[in-house]
Length: 62
Length: 334
Image 1 (cartoon, rainbow over the protein chains, first blue to last red):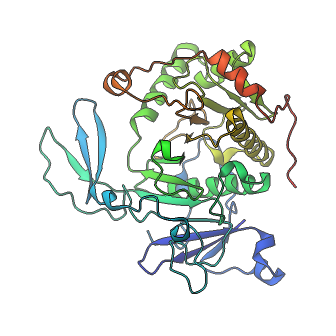
Image 2: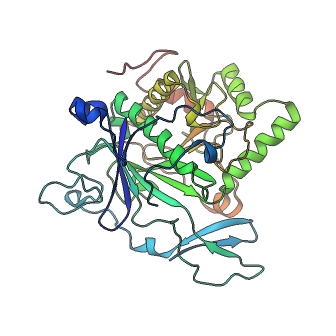
Image 3: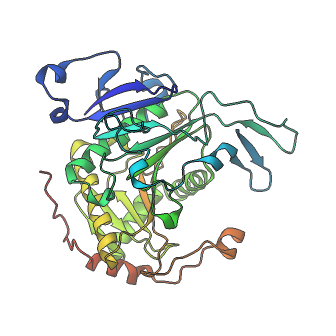
């Protein structure tokens, strides 16, 4: 899936998740912007790995 | 106003969130805040004309980031701290009517992917120690919006029930050298009477120790601490078994059964919880088609549950409810 991060008028964060089929054109499928990323792109983390060190925050505004 | 107040008798945090008193309560269907915003129509919580799955920060959050300053000063006995955290709403579908049971298997599979993504993103934040993914379904549970949705609470502490589970799992590991949950799975499979449905990767049971009549636990056979380590095939099987359990619930009496669905995963505070085992708990309040089990004096007052039924009998009822799948038969993802 692909997620696109947006901000509501009142400043709250919202994230739209959509599948390739819904993404529409091939061009949009491959498009990458600062606020759009592949879900699961970071891959599977090991059982005991710390999420704190595994993940990087992308475009978070919280 | 929201803040965390320490309960010195139970030694746990109470979330005080007074602004939630004003939250939207059962609005008319055509003013649902969780529907997409139609062109020219009133703006909902989702400023998009359509979506598949959408997640947003709760308008009436119990936990916030940054959290407001507490309204009172701490004392030695009565500690208070900011209610730091994140509360999100997860809309499963743009369709207002229906429930998660109506989701196609592919939609359920997509939701598994989104759950994993939210767990990873929220759990990676420094101020978050625990990510609780859950769904309250039905007016009987106190749901204020009927649009199919779940919630995520990202806590700045490990909630008390999880702490108790962790302690039990630690004790069992120390005593036996084995995972408590793996031993429960073995015992349930060996006995078999409380098994509701199983597939190659998961089993659903009403456990020996059930506190609600139709309380179902879904366990992965492999020892996972959280959803992130599920392989692709396990994610497929997870979506599959959840779908089957939900269908069985609704087909039990031909009603849309209310429930609380709670995903129990290891904390995200960076420590090692190798002894913990992922599972999902379903707590439907019904004890019959028309009667509810209430958490009354004994449960609320003493924390001691009374189950008026036998898990073995209730599991047989759910096993017989459609879809009456035999082991390792699957619905097909189309």
